[in-house]
Structures are given as C-alpha cells and as structure tokens.
Image: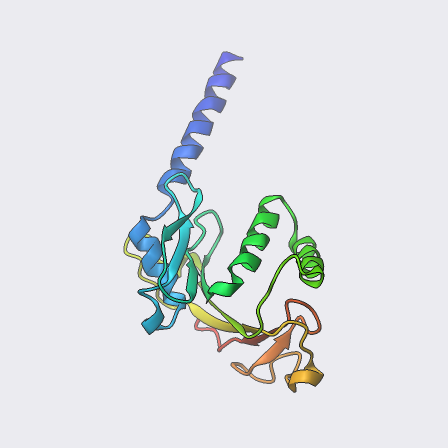
Length: 196
C-alpha cells in the first residue's frame, strides 16, 4: 500500500514539473503570439499567455487596439490568435465558461443569451486572426513558426446571407463566407488554402 501511495505521489510531482517545463519562455510566447497580427501592430499588442505553472496571465500590457493569445501548451497542435480589444470581454467570457467545463454548444448558447439580454457585448465589425497548425510548425525553444495557416474573421452579429450577400459556405479556397448566420456569433470567415 505504501509503495502505491509513494508511486502516486511521485507521478503527481512528475506531472506538475513536466507541465511547468512544458511552457515556453515568456519571450517565445510573445514572439509566436504576435505572428497572427499584421506586422505594424505586433509591437504594441497586449499579450495573454502562461506562467511557468501553466496559469493564464498577462505577459505584456498593450499600447494599441490588439490583444493576442499565446499558444496553450496543454492543447494539441499550435494555435495563436489576435483580436480587436473590444472583443476581450466576449473572449474572456468564453474562456471562463470553458474553464467551468461547458462544451461548445453550452458556451454558444450562454453567450447568445447574454448578448441578447445586454449583459455581454460583442462589437460590430471586430476582427480576429488565427494562426494554426500541427505541433511541428512551432519551435518552442526559438518561437519560430513555419508552415502555419492564417485565417481571418470579422464579427458582424446577427448578419445573414440576405443582409450581406455572402454565401454560407466558401465558393472557393480563400473566398469569404458567412458562418453562424443570424446569431450573436455571425462572422465573415476567410480561410486561405492550407499550407500543410
């Protein structure tokens, strides 16, 4: 019994130390997070990332209208994003609900109700840029990103195909289309052809 308890304790300590060392340095997180932004906005963007203990924290305060998210080291694949600062409360609410264990549909429905009631705001014409790929596209030691795919989003809450003239699926790779029409999360999606 003692040996099982000792092994369990050792495994727990090992998993904590692994999680802590699995987080890239602050500089690497910042360097890779801003790769989702246009070049002239990178230096002034606010950056969220992870502490050595894996806690979600502010890595850098910003001086412009952009907020960027570093890659989550506990998620498979590489994914960083940058968005217009007025989307921050909407994005933070999504993170909070996911932390509570809510699935995609629950998060969607809760935010939909909160936007409709006025409790939660989502601005019109707010942009989001997501750079993603497999684990192999991201060098966690240098922060270099090679071969990732960039997609662009513009939120236009409650828009429909009739109000925008946009199709509900891409007519061709790289062509804009409308996703989640008629909802708080309606957005123009632009996804260039995959590099992978």
